[in-house]
Amino acid sequence: MISNASKRSILRWIHLIFTIPILGYVYSPFVELPNYAPVVRFVFVPVLILSGYWMFSGVCFAIIGVAVWLGAYYLSGVGAAILSQVALFIARKIWLVIRARNSKALGLST
Image (cartoon, rainbow, N blue to C red):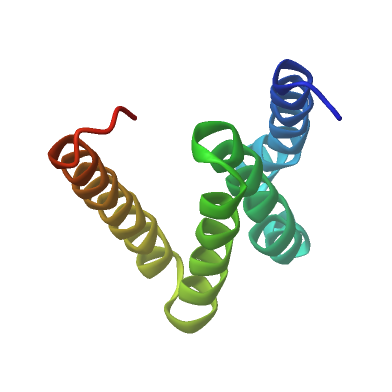
């Protein structure tokens, strides 16, 4: 079994390495953008979301985050995809607050 510190280190390196092509996409000449756009949108950004959310709050939330991003982007574009991530974080916070209140009411410690 891999330790949590090793897992975080691996995820951190994945996150950093997959950021490099996005920086290239952002700073590349405008003429070359159509060549990079699909790969950045459907490979690099989802991998960044997956690794970042996995480090932040676990694999389940990461998979949900990537699925919501890809679905919203595919159906409505980048604006809807960003808003879907905001809504996902709000839903997660509400869930955490409700779970904390329920455990406090039952006298359980989290």
